Length: 525
Image 1 (tube, rainbow, N blue to C red):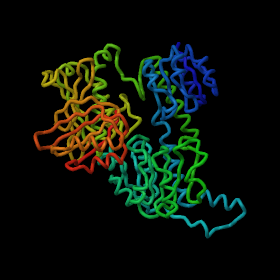
Image 2 (cartoon, helix red, strand yellow):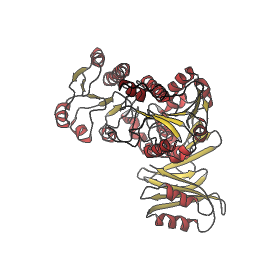
Image 3 (cartoon, rainbow, N blue to C red):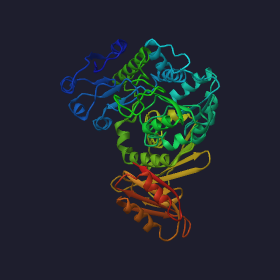
Image 4 (tube, rainbow, N blue to C red):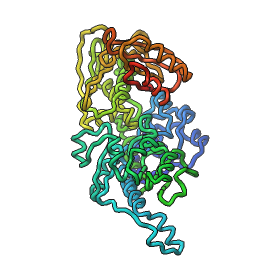
């Protein structure tokens, strides 16, 4: 009988689910790291919430562990890389607290609009300052929803019930999905300019960190109110504090902060700011839901091999994995490359397989490429749920195969169709299973991707390479490799530079201002 150890407080119903499904379970919470290391040996599964840190050291001594289950969305407390190296499945429950988080957002909007916290403090202090607390109605106001996934869609639905006009910005929101949930899709700049209230519901990624900063706030209506119950870091807190001081923002309601627990913060101590200690998922219903779901998922895996909401392991047999392994990194890279370039709504994705790879089962490779494509905007995406997310967002996914080899013995190409254009990235695998990019936007070039990459689109004129090198050198950024491609002499060209340091916005602005350059992008792999 499989054995699971529960290290954090979960609903008693989770224990019942494990036992009903033939899994032995033990529960002991509050263990320090050393005590947990002594206890974990011999268990097939480990169930946690956010309190227990599943470190590389813990994983190293968990010699029987097959699955780690997180009762909740985030897996920041789990060393997923170490678990993957050991062949341990990491699961989460991305949908169990969506309603609770959405309801907390609506509650924060009401509290902000009617100044409820400060009015409560005043009244309980024996004052009766009725004329001091003049609020605003939600009825008739425009709500801007940034991120319209599970939680954002529920917030939009609730807001419409309050007779608010709802506009939404989400790079992956299709017109069909927008109509289904009753929101008007807009650009980010349009949302900032039109919204009376702005609420954020995106993951924290490189693309979304600092999304609402001083520049964004300057584009908003004067008197805008900002609500963030998603992730700390989406809003630059100091910039928002300055906007509150100037009156550009009339108020803010925050459940999440860059540093948690938040003991000090630029937003604290203000009558027009409502704050809570990360309570978005703190209801008895939500905790019950995620506990039951993780117990069901882990039990199904341990007793039948079913994988649901895994964040790290492909649904592959050992034999399939061995044959596909050389192409997995390449699929992830071309997907990520296309995803980092794409900034508008995706309509369709086609994966093209040529040569030797076309003879294999390519479905897992397609899932890996989709994961790379969606990951710049969605940090909960994985091989298991990437195809589902595409279906939910009306992104058409297809594959084509051609057994005959062309210029390369094997070739993978991703073709991404957006609202206004089509984008392609292709790659191959060289000797030693090393992935290479061999085509970008139809322009041939051969490049190995490192962690930091600068891509420059330019007109093919003399002096570009030297100018880019000078600009990077002035910023103390070292070029590791440089790869060039062009459609023809004097026509469009691409420079792909692998660099040793991260590229700052100031450096990108400098390169962007160079003669004959028309697009610049920093990428990470």
